[in-house]
Length: 457
Image (cartoon, rainbow, N blue to C red):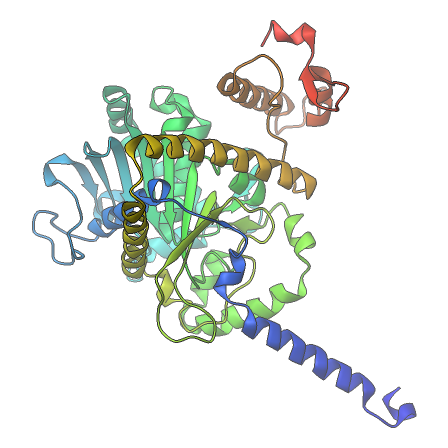
């Protein structure tokens, strides 16, 4: 065609397309990922800098005589430290971690350190995976991280169970950075799925803070466990954004910029609808908190702003071409900027002089909004045809909401177990059929529990 017209028409179109792609990629900044998200409040973000300091404390050989403590210290009382496990204790099965009983905040914290570049065992954990290798609770997870979490849980199960039963009003928090964030997320998954391992602990007491999280679970699990897992991302951090398997990233560690650039080009050419429908594709887990401190075409750092949401589509799907993509992954910077963001939130609340009663009301409102956002995310996942996603329980009927969720989850587990993995089950009931058996629609189109089932519920 170029010869017939006498002009290089196809070549011009190709060059224009490449120029448009390069322009869009260069203009894509981290702020675009969370531009539609809401602002986080001081009440919900308060644990983040504190748990960052707990994770930093894992790097110390002697917590009573710290060498690398941040300004203000780690905030740890050495007398409340239950145990500390090093690589020698874990025999390379899991990263180093500490178990801390935080009486000041009524919290039982298991904090896990990030990747140790000098330890071959950490690479073995990362390399123990292939796309779609490990299934868990109707989705896919990173095999090596799940095995590491299983080892930690087996090793500390009795201690955790004793602490949970001894302090029934304390929360159980798993916190980790980078590699440790994946292990912490897997621990939260396993404990939430098998609550009987820790004395039938209530799901509402289980929390996880994944700092600079690895993409370790499929989209349906990432959304479903958003009420338990919280992921914190600093500005341009590369790890939550690249869908490249972790094993490939660290095989190419010394040419990481080249790998990220190639992956950036590849992901740009793949439609997001296609990515969402791949059940094996892994994502950053749970509710996301995005700390934004830099603006495009501006130098220096600005006062950090924290955005939060439970997104389904647009979940950090594009790598940001930035010179800070790797430095924003450092736990030291995340702790520093999250504390700055927290101080700004507290200063704003102090200036507004919010009374204590209003604070309590705002906390209750925040809890309700998070529940609504969580349910909306589940419904959004179903509407986008995300594999193995299902709608939340109906809000209509005479039963209590907490009982509704528990019975719904038990019904889900029983149906999954009845199907089984061996293919020997006689029948398989889909969720649509199950909902049709349990609910009817009223005149306004709302779903109402059938009268025949109300007594049973």
